[in-house]
Amino acid sequence: MSDESSTGGLARRLQMRRVDQSMARAQTQSKKQQQDYTGILVDNLRENGQIILVSDDMAFAGSLRELVCNTLKMPQSCISQQANAENLMRIARNAVENKKAPLIIIEQNLRGRDLTYIVKLLKIGFPELKVIILAKETDRQRFVLLHESGVDGCLVKPADSQALLEKIALTLRPNDQLERSLEWARVLLGQEEYLRALQVCTQALEQQSNASAVFLLMGDIFRSMKEYDKAVEAYGKAMGGSTIYLDPLRKMSELYAETGDMQKQIECLEKMDEVSPLNLERKIQIGELLLKLNQSEKARKVFDSAMKLSNRQARENVSGVAYRVADLYVSTDPETAASFLQRGLDARKEFWSMEDIATFNRLGILLRRMGKWEDAANAYLKAISVAPNDENLHYNLAMARLEGKELEGARASALKAMAINPDLPRKSSRIASNLAAVFMSTNDKMHAMPLLRQALEQDPENTEARELLANAEKE
Image (cartoon, rainbow, N blue to C red; front, top):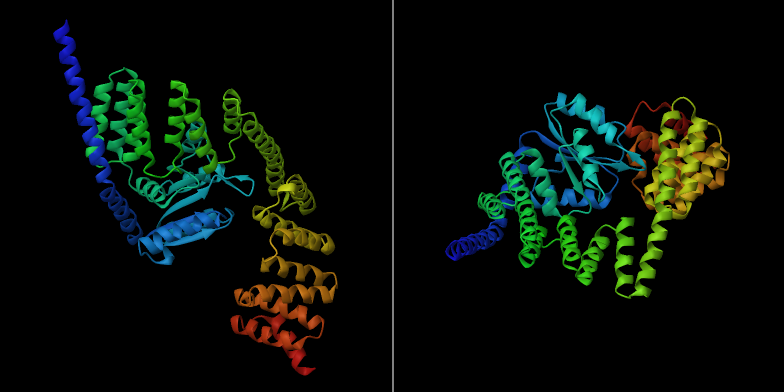
């Protein structure tokens, strides 16, 4: 009996040594792995690939362009960005007809609208397209639902460039062998065949597969073996030096809860909260642990933060419903649509941000169509209080005031819009002629005539600009 026990212990030690060696080799292979991911993306973009980003998150858009255009040295034309999903079906159809192979990266929730149903329609119409959903931290059930809607990959924001590159590459060229290996390792883990499960994982690492996913599973195996130090080490390697990857931190938090180390559990939860601060349940969990450690003042601050977040999320839910209802009425009953947009904005009044600018603009356009220029002007003024340097808001305010014959105010708004962005008239012939019309209403030919000439240069068929210019020259 003792001989068998001794032999089994020796086998275990040898297996653990091989695991340690494989984990070390996997870290040294990470640079080669990144080169593989880079090659996948570059090859795709060279073979008529294209990335279509549907998001108004300028920080994420900047990171994506930095990766593709600066790091990978691919042309700007490889990426296009849409701030809304209204024309996504048409854009996808045009891309496919032009024999492009676009990758769609789309927000799960954009301006209060859940875009899951749009993704589902997109995949039904164009099953060959690859789609990655951008989401804030979410649970496993939500990810399952997204995959059932046809999503090829999910990426939790914020994400560093390596996580972004890895997700895109694996979406374009899935590693089916890795998934089969990990699934088999999970089966072995469930059967408590820990050493065999580790052996499968080490083989996956030696194949230079997705190291983060393998390390994460190895951490689970070590944790089941009560090898807590090795589990923490594996979870740390799964992060790859980036705390943006939340799963390893969550696993570490669970491990420390299992071992009764509340202080380290709190540290993990706080790191997660820094990266993803909108998780209400996590804030309450942190507060509860702080109370158990008699850190009552710190716990009270966390609970105060949780109460503020709860209030904000409740209001955002109300506004989200209002915006979706407005979408249903916008083409048939603009007045009702405008009333719901207003209710949605009122619900978020204490939390207005750049995310609300598009809604203010939309509301203003609807009000102007109904002849309610003063209400439209008030909507634009509220938006300007949030984004004072948005030239489009000042331009729209100028148009509303012109319609209401508030001519000096319209002129002031037009001047402000052009001061913020002198190239605004170059966006279109119509914008140039509209601005000219504002200046002509106050007999300001010095500003009007160059704009009219510019409008005609852009579109010689602009009859309104031609008539205004003729009248100005006649006078």
